[in-house]
Length: 65
Image 1 (tube, rainbow, N blue to C red):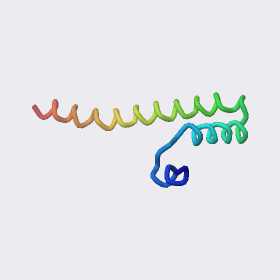
Image 2 (cartoon, rainbow, N blue to C red; image 1 turned 90 degrees about the vertical axis):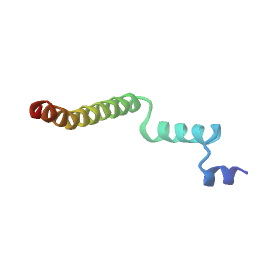
Image 3 (cartoon, rainbow, N blue to C red; image 1 turned 120 degrees about the vertical axis):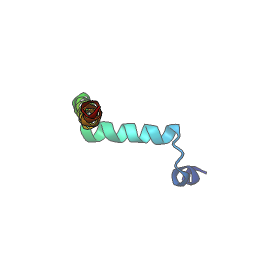
Image 4 (tube, rainbow, N blue to C red; image 1 turned 90 degrees about the horizontal axis):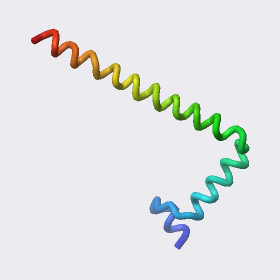
């Protein structure tokens, strides 16, 4: 049954616990907040860049009218 969950993509509490333990072992408790800050800033930069791509198209429409 557990192997079926892994192959079907269903994530249970045991899989989450294993991932959390592996992350703690690999990076340590002090490194995780730093990694999350980096991830958050990366997401923010991505959102800002995607908004900048949308703005010229709306500005071009206003200039053409």
